[in-house]
Amino acid sequence: MRILITGAGGFIGSELVRELLSAERRLTDRRGIPRAIDRLLLVDSYLPANADGRVEQIQGDISDGAVLRRIADWQPDGVFHLAAMLTSAAAKEPDRALHVNVSALAQLIGMVGSQTAPPKFVFPSSIAVFGGALPDIVDDDLVQRPQTSYGTHKSIAELMLADAARRGEIEARSLRLPIVLVHPGPPTSSVSDRIAAIVRDAVAGRDVTVPLKSETRIPVVSVAAVVAGLIAMHDAASAKLGGITAINLPALTVSMADIVAALERTVDRSRLGQITFAPDAALEAIVDSWPKGFVSRAASAIGISSDDSFDSIIRHYIAGLGNA
Image 1 (cartoon, rainbow, N blue to C red):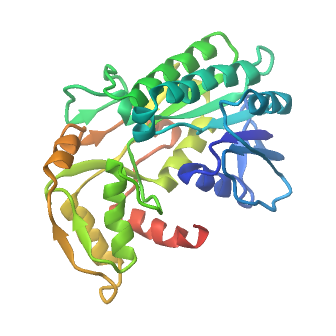
Image 2 (image 1 turned 45 degrees about the vertical axis):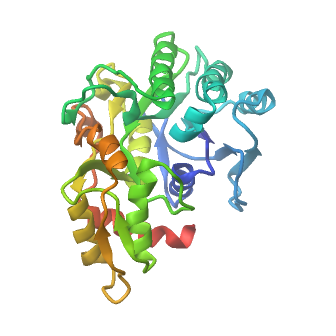
């Protein structure tokens, strides 16, 4: 199989690349047959060197026409489209974000789509497609009312992919992600990264300031669970999805107190710095507007589940530090 990954140099993309290049990894083709990955085309504005003989690389912007034409010439059997401008960047440059997140996607669909051999097309959507007055538990079918440019772009993208699938050009599968942990850094100003910093600092032996109340709960998922979910979406038989093209990735709901307790269980006490709570009212207001649970009625049918504990998320982060 020939597999394209855009955004391959990012947090999730680099983990996906490692998994797809691991020994004996196969993907299911559109006829349901498990096949070896013969070639892997990686696209991003920055890509680390990769010595695997199956890998080809295009270093460039996904919204660049020249990059898209090179992708079209490659004709992938499967696509993992991870390239995007995220929430804070999209808010600062909405026009550019629309070009990257929406227009480039439309062009990519046109470049790789085929009526005779439609590729599988896997897309990480986001919890950000939901907004407004949310219930504590958000499922697959909640009406989408995004409150950010990024969430709006993801919602548009879901519809574009579903429409292309209806036309028979691709097999579209969108997986909506909750808060993905633990980004290795460097630190950013995003809300999710301020939560990730709790783990980063603790594992590094630094003192930790938790910027939320101990009882504040959030829906989280490890990057390992995201990668497993994206691959499961690629491999799922259409019949198992029941005609839907977008589902939630079920999350583990944890409080800040749960996170601290998990750190105390998994990090050597001699290396663990002081942990204090200093709630930030503005940050608390943002997080309180998020759902407390993120679930999917369709996920279990194709083998997708949440992480079993926050301890396992921390252990995966520690194990992955050698790949950073």
